[in-house]
Length: 130
Image 1 (tube, rainbow, N blue to C red):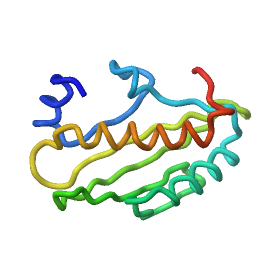
Image 2 (image 1 turned 90 degrees about the vertical axis):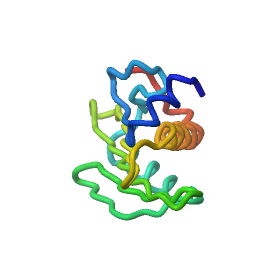
Image 3 (image 1 turned 120 degrees about the vertical axis):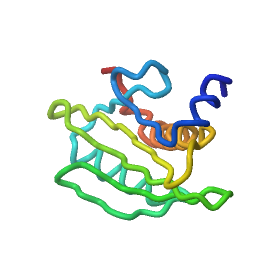
């Protein structure tokens, strides 16, 4: 992890992905799946990841809310958004924020990379470019 990322984490207590992210690791991930199929795959995959607790699922909006407790006792709220780009293509974005206090020392960044890594492994045959 870069020094710049750690320094940003000292003052920032959230991280998000988007098409316009400067960091290539924080770019939106795309899958060649319908929204319903992507929802089923992403939802079932997230439920199996150790250390994350599923809080809410809103299928019609395409949002899954998770909670993760850190080793230091802080709580992180994570929202995974599944958006239909076309009938056969879906985008997945992740927003992660730490509750309370200043900065997260890059923990939210690592959570996003961790979740994308698991999803990309599970959905590798469907991964595509924007």
